[in-house]
Image 1 (tube, rainbow, N blue to C red):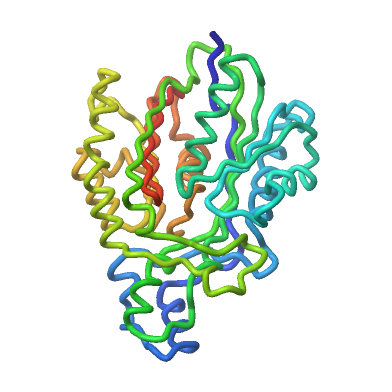
Image 2: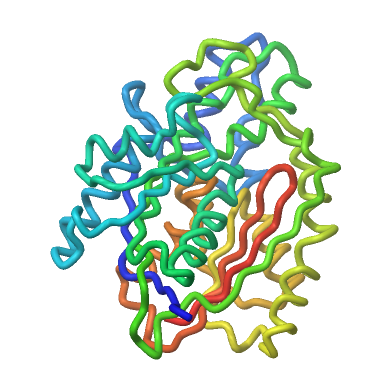
Length: 335
């Protein structure tokens, strides 16, 4: 059977950066309610967010990340891409697939599809790519993410309860990533295993009811949820799910060199790390300086460590996905 590995990866951010304090000022300026100064950073640990411009969409950041990847890896040609998967929590429009918009701009010429499962979209796309390559359907697959979730943050709130329900939206940051997964001929570089679980009782704990990022005029286009209830749901399933996954692979926590986990806040990341027994060095922390970047979080963390040269041959990487719904996922990868 064929095996697959991650050949190349890249990330981009929008140019604009907004601090959590500046975000509170914007809420105060447009609302009947004034939030307590410093509450966003105090509760979430998030100091700043990368924020997309009005004319930047989900596809925009995916396109930029793809172009950056092709520029850095001349051996990967656009003609060699057999499948393009757009995998993000958000979309430009509901139909057709946002992957078509990306393909038109970057110049690939292959089948396309969207994978959308909230913040686990990239992880699900990675499993799909692995399956396609293993069964010989495709040889080289480009997975892109583009998240402009800051557009779904409600900046005009009526009262304290409205602010509380809208609070998860104030954790968001925007980013784009691109990753090439291909048939691996090496004894190294291999996607080893995946596991997923869902507890759909919590589907309405955090929701974005409206449409794509190009049409953000409806009240339903703002993110709402109960952050405490969502954390409780993840805590119920999360640590045991990850530890059982490692146990099935006969791996200890200390055997993992790098942990790339979806991050919604710094306190929750610390809670998850302590519950699982990971060290700070194992985890690539991103949330404090770029916010919750949804499905871009896992490939972003990989790309950051890869750019620094921290990923070494035969290192073991654990990807941990947490998504509204709720869904949890894990992937084990050998570099």
